[in-house]
Length: 414
Image 1 (cartoon, rainbow, N blue to C red):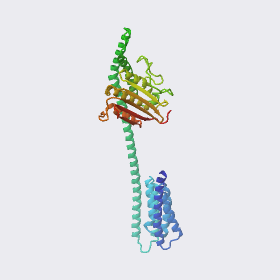
Image 2 (image 1 turned 60 degrees about the vertical axis):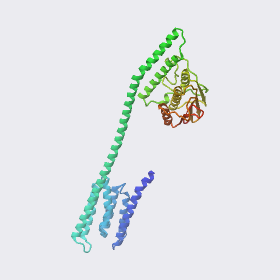
Image 3 (image 1 turned 90 degrees about the horizontal axis):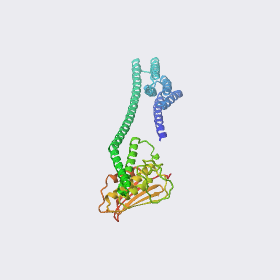
Image 4 (image 1 turned 135 degrees about the vertical axis):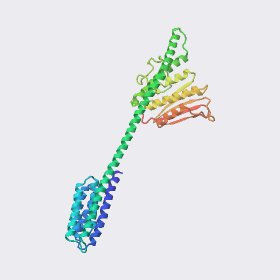
């Protein structure tokens, strides 16, 4: 494409030079007494116009003497001035004024002197003066036109530069405002949620401690509240870190267990909030499939029968895919607990080569005849999958219940 654009102006310049040569050729052939020198001058002067765009001074310095020779010998009239006028326009357009002015003076002075010394038959001094004045006006017009064209081009470039600068400024302002909004949201989340979640976590921890101190059996719901509070604090902290530092490397956020045997996830028997339940390689803020066992155990503690099946060889996932898979399972299990009634859920994770398949089924009361209205949770789930270039199917099953199936592209497995 660049080569085509580069040859197009050259082709146009060549066509212009050919047209001028044809015009001069017709003029020369119509004047008696023309010799080979006149034809050569017409050819060289016309050919120099090929360079009027790229080397205007060269065109001026070549066309002026060639056309002066032609004008002095044949006196063909204004036709001989055309190549010089074009060259003067090009030179003025490029910002050169002295050389075009000298060229115009040389051409006009030479032709005027010759015409006055040896006027054509029937041509008076007044007519010669009028023709020279007319040519002078054309030379001035060519110079002015070239100067105006140069200023217009400079103005257009300045306008384009201002537009680019304005666009860059708008982008910088938008980024700054987005950063300020993220910080504001982070502050609001911290001020509004951290205190409340901390109280829930502390109160649940105190209740568990007192129950164990008295030798009573700690209710499973109380343990679930304590663990949920710890997880909420962990995820809130991770969210605040992302809001305050959105440019950090996502690949450092998670590093799932590599090449382990697949099978149902198992929970961790640790004190919530102690920091011992977090994988040291993922850090306390990571939420990925390495925490799937904890997630399913927490769902089971609410009375939801849930099973987990993992197929395929586990490998490191992209951070965004790992988080999205965890959130999809989390949202699907939450929906089963809230909306499916007395139902059981099955979670299936399939490492299927170039994609990760996440599927959560339940045998609840959803029916194809009365599909549920998608809420914020399903909408957010679909947005996550779409942002990763994947596919999501969330709909009632023909045999009853609801299914959520997400296919998330991985690229080349690490």
